[in-house]
Image (cartoon, rainbow, N blue to C red; front, side):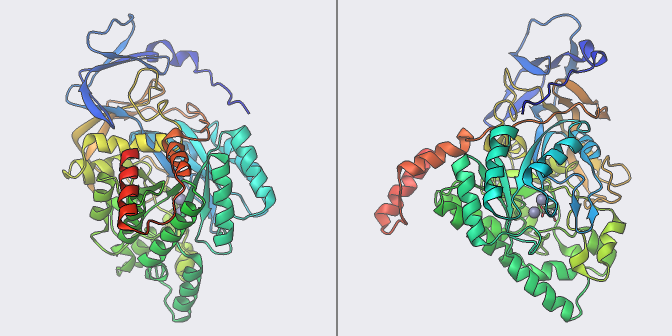
Length: 512
Ligand SMILES: C[C@@H](CNC(N)=O)C(=O)O
Ligand SMILES: [Zn+2]
Ligand SMILES: [Zn+2]
């Protein structure tokens, strides 16, 4: 199905059409350079100094600022029907908030209703999103049950609808959860289609058993949520997903890594040469999960998500360090927002609290503040983990995720010193609270250019609904499948001798 080409309304052309970003420091994942950027018709046309440009070009002075690829958020759930309610940020408000925070593309999840086919669910999401989005978007598709029909639909989605990634949930028993045999078959199907398998990694059987025990013991407050699924329940499933994917030689993307233990598994398996990518989220590097165990039950309910925020206060710093050192590769938001009254659906039973928190608007500032401003992460690594790596994994690169001639003009002019205080009183999102309430962050987008159009103009939001479009993600991303194919050429068992271990490690180092 071809994506309908959107005509940019005439009044948005001409003056918005030509832009020169001058005197900035362009930051890509592989380096920084002082140069100017000329944009026309939504595309980056020239890079350099003293550029020859046509009259009528608007010039933005980026002196003292970083000029970076727009953020790409690989993990959102806008207007998602879940746990008897629906997330309140829809594709308009959610993408408007994304743009406000410096994100110029999001990837959401098609999650089928009960008895809805994958194709019907995909069409429903497209119909919901296409006319509303304020920036470009892609779609992952969730496989929440397994059958020959599902396998066929995966192929159709790949061949006709521009999907290259499928999400399997190992949690949410009796709702979305797949068991090992189904995971083996779903991962094998992903591999045979040239796709990326994604997981929500928690052991849903253990969670269900623990939740029952806790409720039977009279634990109904928000603390029961994390108690039912401590870190090792996430780490066990993370390890199991990695092993299954490795055994079928399928590339694996672990979504919303929320604990040190799970992050350690991912770093270790990557060191063993697995084709594996780990995603942190704004919440997990921004705050810890102590509020769930506090005396204020209302506040505790608000930050309930899965996998849960961890009470270990060293978790955020551990995860931002792993992001900085390539232990983890991407940062999403897992934005799945429910208002306080929706969260109160679980006031007498923590298993009824709709799972999910905000993050799409604050993701970029949180990672800059906790990473770059804190002196832990370089600006180039910031670009990698907030934009480029996601673009490469889902085969959007170099159209997205880089400041380069010919790339889409999705550009953020970033003020590394400007500060802002995060608050529901001022945020763009629809949700009526913010898990980062009151947090002062350093690092703010001063201009956000979406497909060549200035949508944040000197910190003034001018996002326009319907301006974004669906972006197809082609199969066989080279960044991923070059490694898979290399491993196929070298079928290798488990290294049994020190010599084999060294040989494999040297081979993998040469490939990295
Ligand atoms: C259902 C969805 C959003 N909710 C959440 N992460 O708590 C997910 O698990 O990714
Ligand atoms: Zn999840
Ligand atoms: Zn999610």
